[in-house]
Length: 78
Image (cartoon, rainbow, N blue to C red; front, top):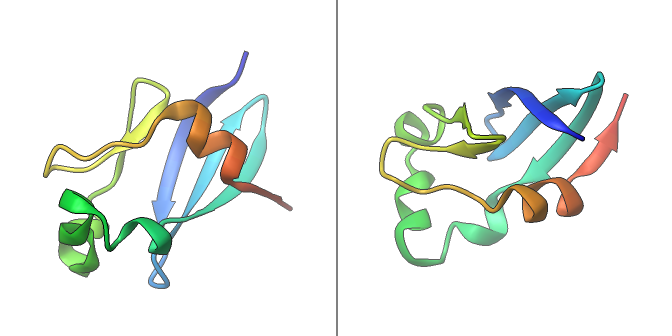
């Protein structure tokens, strides 16, 4: 079972994810920024408000990402 513990936004519109047991992953949000409400995330002030919510990430504008998609399309980092 993987639980998302923390998320940190990066200026290049990627997010660093930490899952338990301790595993760091990187997810590139840029491909989503041209789709629907994800366009709001092009604004750094909105993007950096990302938070962990129910084992995935979400933003104040109501956007979230499917937890399985988030994990499976992110890349493992050291």
